Length: 569
Image (cartoon, rainbow, N blue to C red):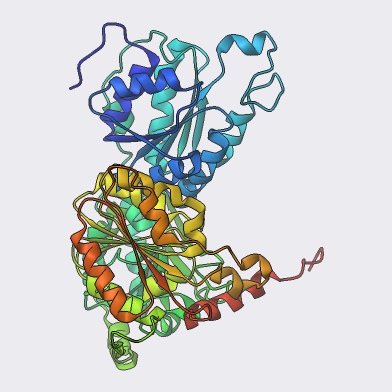
């Protein structure tokens, strides 16, 4: 329990609530509207302030921290800070992560006095930021009077925790130090909503009956499984083993079902699926979708939508042909269904007949020019039970998805929001929460240029993150969707840039690799560097990209180019 200040303030209240819900690091960019609030947060001994280079990186670092910790906080100033941080907040919304975005705001007296203020749109109405925030959060509140702060702060945080979505809290600069009451029991904020018992039992019984009438059931796992928490991943394994059927996962759910499990049949991603997962999914006559997200990206431009009725188990409800059940929590539903479902391994019998033989990967000689395949081969050898692999938007998606995750290895991807540059600050935030894990980032040169500054924070906190930067001199993913001169970027000396972040006391290493042998040596140096990040710049041919990216790009381009539908058609 933290020491309690003599005068208890709004800032103290917020700090105590953040600490009580398990936040240990809060990500900040200072600005004059939030400085008093930052002082209050600093004063809480259970919180560690993490300064970021800019608000975009700050919000994405908080997004990564939420992946590791379950909840995070990002603190910025009004307008010039918050509007930039809305980008990472949008990612948290799309990726189902409870990020608490906190913004300082003008003095409460200024609106009534019709003052024109800095860091505003130059009008006397300052409510626009709150209205914007309402569109990208599950709950947005603005504290106007100190005595309302406890109710509004608790309300916003509880909404975020329950919905697994971001929330927004706006605190005027002159209220952060204003007096308010101390917090009540944290259980009022954190107590979960459990399933309605009658709805849960009815959903499980109906699902079991539905599946018993099918001959070829398959489970398809989506990215919301992990976000659901409450033991949902373990419950899924029990259900899969009780059913005996094939289990495929969507690309954004890679690693959420053990890849060494005998019922795992690969990544279902339409024409770019791995291990023939698409063949068994399309052969099924019943598809139990667990936390799935069908988007243009995950369906390869809408070409991979299953063509049979779907049974969908979401984080808080279950829907399948002829039935819908509200207030059914995903983990509880999967556990209950495991006790009632009948064993049917027909899809595993069929899959064992059609699964492809293991791919033999050629090992390059040390003097061979570096290729995308050789980079993947050497990264594969790095993966172990302590690894978390971040894959950036672009060809890193496809190369990363092809890798085999050993037991315990974790995989992070931002497929719903798809913000290039996400991986660098997100990996930084994640590593602060899990310094015990081996963090590897696969990122392209174009993406790296968006958020490169946050490597300096990895240096600052002595985080031994390995960044494998694939330099093919451009936005390769955009080239495959729609090429143009705008996809060509200025080349940097990436290895030298990273060393510039060291200043006088840093331990970052910047290395280059143009051959297979140079990459091998660079990886060895990275493993030996335990006091800071190591960036390995891997130079490959501009046209060396995966077949999967090319195929996917063609279909996504076709989906983007669909003509407008005429009225009534």
